[in-house]
Length: 380
Image: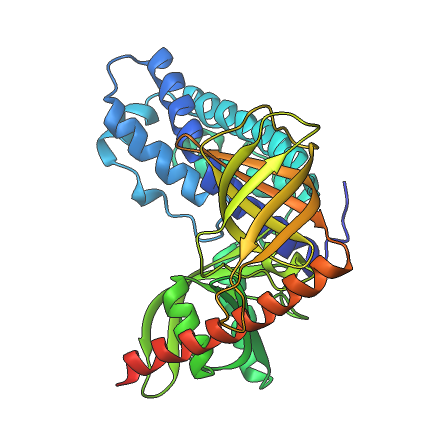
C-alpha cells in the first residue's frame, strides 16, 4: 500500500471520483435497492432509494452525517447490524469494481490506495453509528485516514482561499462560436460555497453566453475546473460561481488551431473511394480539422479516408464562392437523434490552406465583434 500520497494524488483522485459519481449514481442506487429487497421485501423502495442516495453522496466526504437517513428505515435496519454491514459492504465492493472499470475506460490512474482509505473510513462510520455492536471490534485501517479522505468540493474551496491569500490569479476559458476567450481573473470574495471573481468584460459575457465557467489548471489545481454561474454583475465586472468540479480534460485546449463556427450553411460532400457521396452541413472549421453534420452515413466509419468538398463565402464580399477541396480522415462519429456528426482531420494543400486561413481570420474578427455587440446589449 502506497504511503507517500501527495496532494496532487489527492486532487487527481478527487477529479476522477467526482466524474465517476456523476455517471454511476443511478446504477449504485438500483443495485442497493435490489440488495435491500432480497433482505427484506417489506422495506419501502422509495425509502431505500433515499438511503442509497445519501450513502452515495457521502462516500468520499469527511463530514458524513448519518442523520440524513430516514429514521424509520434506520430503526428497521438497526435490528440486524450484521445485515446492515452486508448491505453496505457488498454495495461498496460493487462500487469499487465499477470504479476500476471506469478508470480503465477513461485511461486514468485509479489511485486504489486512496480509494480503499475512503471506502474503509466510510464503512467504519456506518458500523459505528448504525451497528453499535461493531464499535469495540473494528480495527481502524489507518489512524491518519482522515487526512487522506478527499472532500473534493472542500479541497477546491480551500485551494481558492490559498490563491486569494497569496494574491494570485486564475485563468478562465470559454468558447464563443468556436473562438477561445481566455483572461486572468482575481478572487474578490469567498462566502461559503460561493466565490466571486473580478474579470475582463469579454470573459464575463462569453461565460454568460456559454452558460458555465471553466478554469484552466495551474500550480494549485492539477485538473481543469468547471463551475456554475450564480450571478453576473456587469457593472462591477464580477461573477459569482459555485458547484466547482474537476474535469478530466478540456478539449478546447487540445486544439492546435482556432476552430470557428461558419456564418453560412455550407453544403459539404464526403466521397470515399468512388463510393456514394454523403452530404451534410459544415459544423466547424480549423486549419487542420472540421466537423460535418449529416442525416446520412453511406458506410463512413472511423478511419475512413475521404475527400471533402464545400464552398465558403468570399471575405472580400465579391459574392464569389471559394471552392474548397481537401483530403480528410474521419477521427470520430457522434450519433445523436438520427444525425451523424463527423469529426475529421484534414490535409489541405497550400492553395486550400491560404483560402481556409483567410476565411478563418476574418470569421474570428467577425465573431469577436459579435461578442462585443452582445456585451453592449447587456450593459446598455
